Image (tube, rainbow, N blue to C red):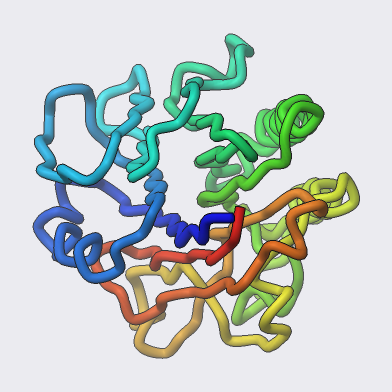
Amino acid sequence: MKNYKMISWNVNGLRAALKKGFNDFVQDEDPDILCIQEIKLQAGQVELNFTEYHDYWNYATKKGYAGTAIFTKEKPINAFNDMGIIMHDNEGRVIALEYENFYLVNVYTPNSQRGLTRLEYRQVWDKDFLAYMKNLEAVKPIIFCGDLNVAHKEIDLARPKDNHHNAGFTDEEREDFTRIIEAGFIDTFREFDQEGGNYSWWSYMFNARVNNVGWRIDYFLISEMLKPNLKDAFILPNVMGSDHCPVGIEIGL
């Protein structure tokens, strides 16, 4: 069995993150697998000298928007972009890597947007993404991570009453997350910490991060059969460089 340290981070623009210590963060944390979301760039727009890592990218068709990447020390057996559903597959939101004993999936879930203009689409996405996870899980257990753009329970954001019916905390989005749990996936952080005040995203306005007025919307989830392998789950709120902070797990596989 090999122990893996895995980290996920919505960098809110990789070029901006590179100017704010991204390379130092990778060197200091030394993850076996690093998943990033919202890279906001296209192929060839950035050069990274991560000689220890194999890199996998999924770029959005729209320039400067969305996109995901994975850096992994261990070369996977296979790599797949997207879900194979045309309406979802132009924003670079999903990368799946196949390893010997598991699948790793990096996801950047669509935001329902101000005024919930994209909530209906988001609900279709949630249904299709869960089906995609279950199809993969029929072959091997799954670890999936990323910015899921939903605070599941009131404990997962600082001001639940003020944000009820806002994007990321609608009843519909929260119910879709519950369906993920009911389908047999484990919210790894809650296996170790049941307390409030643990967040992964803060608005840039009103000193939200200084005052820890945040949301926990970044996750690692695992197939239930991997629960005995889970050693730790963590949030790194002191890491700057984005309006999100990194989250991670340690797991033996």
